[in-house]
Amino acid sequence: METEGRYTLVGTLVLAVIALMTVAIVWLGGIADTIAYQTYTLYFKQQSLDGLAIGSPVKMRGIKVGVVDSYRFAQGGDEAVSVTARIDEGVPVHVGAEAYIKRNLVTGIASVEINNGPSSSPLLDEAPKGERYPVIAEGSSDIDKVATALSRLAVNGAQVLEKMNTLLSDDNQRAVNRTLANLNELSTHLAANKGNLTAAVQGIRDASEEFRLASASVGQAATRAEGSIVSIGQNADAALQEAALAMEKLQHDAGLISAQIQQLTETGTLELTNVSRDIRTSADVLTTAGQRLSNPRTILFGPGQQQLGPGEKMP
Image (cartoon, rainbow, N blue to C red; front, side):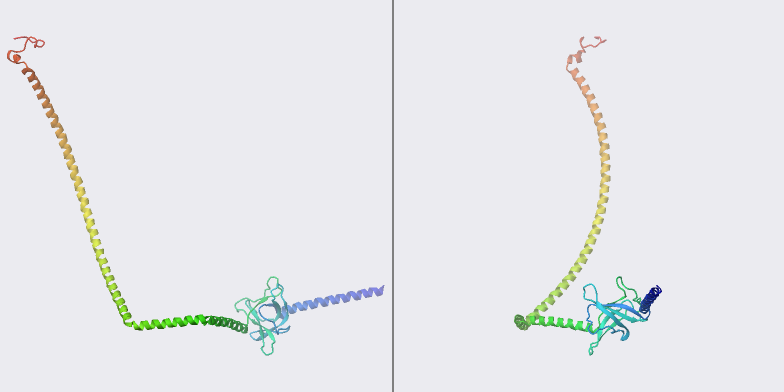
């Protein structure tokens, strides 16, 4: 029993020591990750990693600031390579930094070169979502830029040569020859008719001068016409004012004539009434005289017994 208890105690102590060592190693590894260096992830999709190995230097402005810790194909199917780089603590890596592969043309050994971001930008110390370490974007080296430019130049040169071949084809050459012949014929014709062309040019100049003079005359006529129109307008205004005064006077005279006619009409009506009354009185007198003259005996001997009125007696 004592032996089994002793073995159990020893096994427990061994397990405890192993656990403590594991914790210490993990803790020391974490401390090393946060103190000795900074870890970044670099993704390379456009550049080849030929000559790059674990432990290859990571440089900034030609100075070694870290090493390549590991690399692997990134997940996602875009054939990008994920490179983990450890950079010495105290080396500021700013937001906007770019990394590219720099290769020795003689030995073929490659290294990672980092173009740091603007010094005014913040430090790159935050890992994007889904990433363990901060990510440095992929850039391009001067050699890559030159190679790209040369490639584009070669493509453009090939296109230019192809266009030149098309331009210098047999059909185009014949067309150019015909064009040159036509130009030669045209120049000969122009030289032969130089005098006529000179006369035509002089005629154009004379016509231009006449047109200029005609334009000036038209301008002067327009100015005079404008003055005449203004004068006519002023005269028309004066005539309208005089016509308005004449109409007012005519209206006033017409009112006076109307009043006089009305007064004359009233006077004439009274006189006609008097004349009518006199005529009626004269008619009554003539009627009475006519009745007396119709019986002469009555005039000579007086009225008879039958003609006496009530209360009248014979003399």
